[in-house]
Length: 368
Image 1 (cartoon, helix red, strand yellow):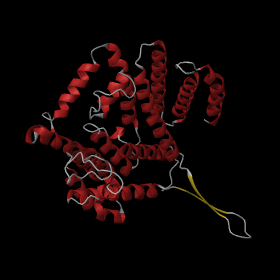
Image 2 (cartoon, helix red, strand yellow; image 1 turned 180 degrees about the horizontal axis):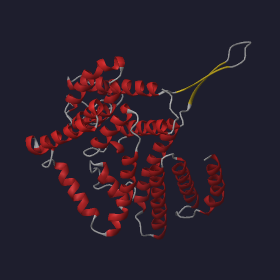
Image 3 (cartoon, helix red, strand yellow; image 1 turned 180 degrees about the vertical axis):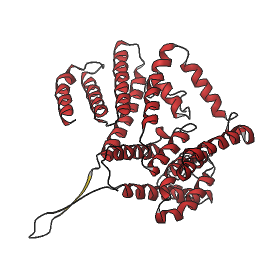
Image 4 (tube, one colour; image 1 turned 90 degrees about the vertical axis):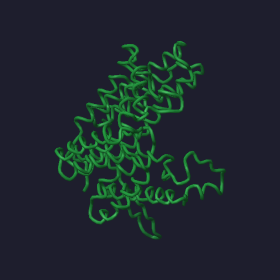
């Protein structure tokens, strides 16, 4: 893969000066550099489904540049596409850093001695512990907020004027929304099923309750059922959750306002075969200032059925050998049915780390 990266760099030196698809030539060169880097990262991904999706997004990026240059694409939307591309670039960088298990290097230089270098790889347990610690921090802040003790607002109020979007007793942690906090706690929950971390499960459970987000709670129930007994209990819990959402509490099911959003999004995206197949383009929103609150539909909206096929292919072929990681992955897949966790940086970062660890273990790059 190093050879491929070198070849791409050599090609980039030749083609970047030829990238002239912007009104300002230097800006066009920057656009071309970003595209070359994006393609390089996509090629470097170890999973064929993720790599294929990255190359497909690269093709969309080229199309947007060309359409903008020829006047058939609104220039303002080009910036939206670039923002979406940059988000994916950072996600790929995090993914590759975790996958390749980068070394922690500590260099100590004492007087009259040579440099002492300590190298060690970050183990799975280290990653798990880091996830648990970050989840406990967010959970603790959320619980305090539930009791009208918001340390975040208190600190920020010393520097800026605070305008709360939600009631003062809303548990959001530092994520800005109770749905995002609940998703973060839900995805982190399986890693508390270890040794002494098990004693913190009531705290995480209470954090989920005060966050008051049904989709995250449903995802945790199904995920934990799988962890304890495998697919049979998971399927039973899925059926139970389905009955709850449709019969007992339809407000969280078919009568939820988000169902109307999803139907509206599907109606708009399927108005032509082109949008159905290819989508509306990277970063394009269903509605200004709002998301579809469903990552599967967002993929269809942005990248069409082609993009969705890469996503489904990845989900169906992901490694299941690590019970903690795969349970967290199940929770992610369920939560994003009613949440846009992959478009929110903290939860997206958590998901990328988990996916990279799964791939790292599958290919034998793991340290226990």
